[in-house]
Image 1: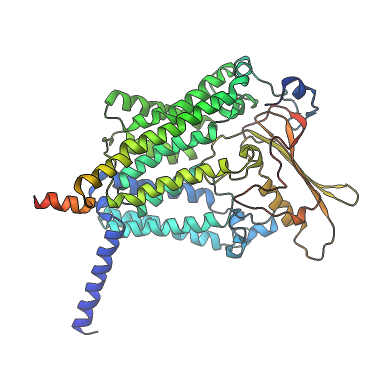
Image 2 (image 1 turned 30 degrees about the vertical axis):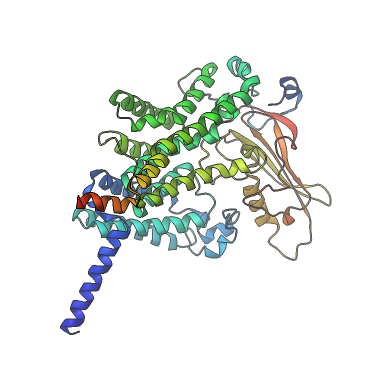
Length: 83
Length: 427
C-alpha cells in the first residue's frame, strides 16, 4: 500500500462532490503492515485445505479402491453382486 | 407405412430414449427428491435470469446504435453472431425469450407427468439459449451467472448430480476466497471507501467481519458436509445469515440463485454424503478441477488483477475491489479532450479492456479516418490513489490478449499515482 503521507499529498479528484476523502480506520491502520503476512497465511490455508480434502476424500479412497480390488471399481461392484 | 416400419421406428425411438436416459443419468432425476428439487431450481432460476436479460440492447443489433457490442476477450469476433433486434428497433429478442418461457412451461408439464427425460431436454434447450446469449456479450459474466451456469451444467450432464451440486456450492464459497486474499478483505477497504460503509455494523469493526467471512468460506464451509448435526446446522445457519445480510447490499438476484440452492442442499433434505470415486464420478471431479484452474488464471498473469482486470471473469470475483475511474480519449494533434467518462459506482469494474473496446467502437470504426487518438485511464481501487494504468498514443492500434499480460496496461508498481479519491457509492 502507498505511504500515508505520500497519499495525502496527492490532489483530490472530486468525482463525488460532498463526500469526504477516503481514509483508514484505526484497526485498518494497525493491520496495514501485516497485509502481506496475512495474505501468505491465507494462501497456505487455502492450498492446505485443497490438498487435505482431495487426499482424504478422493485420491486415497480411489487408490485404495483400485488396489483393493486389483481391478476397476465397476468390476468390483460386479464381484460383490456375484458374491 | 407398413407394420414392420412402424415397429422398427418405435424400437429406435425407445432406444434413443433409453440412451438419452443413460447418457444424462435421468434415473437420478426419477429417484432422488433433491434432484427433482434441482430441476425446479433450474426452472425457477432460468426465469430470474431471462427476466433480467430480456430487452437487453447489447445482445441485439441495437448495440450498434450505442457503444457497440463488447465481446469476451477470448471471443472478440462475437459480433458476427448477433442477429436479434429488440425494442425500439424490433421484436426478435422477445420472440426468443417468450419461446423460452414456453419451454419452461413445457418442462413443468413434463415434470408433473413424470416424463423426466423430456423435462430434462427442455432444460437443455434453456441452457443452450443461455450459452448463446452469454457468448455474445461480455456483460453476462456476473458471479451469479457463473453459479447458475455451473449448477445447470451439473444438472444436465454430470452423474452424481446431488453430490456434485453440493460440492460445487461449497467450492464456490471456498474459491471466492482466492479473490478475497487482498487488502480489499484483509483490511476491509472495499467497505471503508464507501460513503455508506458496512450495513448494520460500525465501520471501525470492518476488518473483523471481512476476515470472519474469509475464514468461514475458506475453512468452516466444509462443515456443511459434517455428520455432526450441531456443527452442520451451525455453519448452515451462518451462511443463511450471511446471504440475508449481503442481500442488503446486493439485492435479491444473488441470494435467489445461491441462497435457494443452499436451502435445498444443506437444509431440510441434508444427508451426509460419501464422495463418489467410481468411474462415473470422473466427469464430476474433472469439472471441479476445471473450476479451480479457471479461478487461478488471474493469479498467473503478472500484476494485481483487481487493478488491471487481466484474467478476471474466468472465475469468481465477488466484491474483489471497490472501483472509481476516469477515462479520457483525446486528439493527439492538439490534445483536445474528445470524450471523458468517469465512474464512481463501486461495482462497476473499471476494465481497461471494456473501455478500450467501447471507445474503439466510437473512434476507430471508420477505415478512412487517419486521425490518431490518445487513450488514458486512471483507476482507484478501495479508496487508494488513482493510478494511471493506461496512457497510450494510439487507441486504434491497441489489441487485447486474453490470457497474458498486455503491455499497454500498467501494473500497480508501474502505474503512476495521480490523485486521491473521495468516498464513493455502492451503486
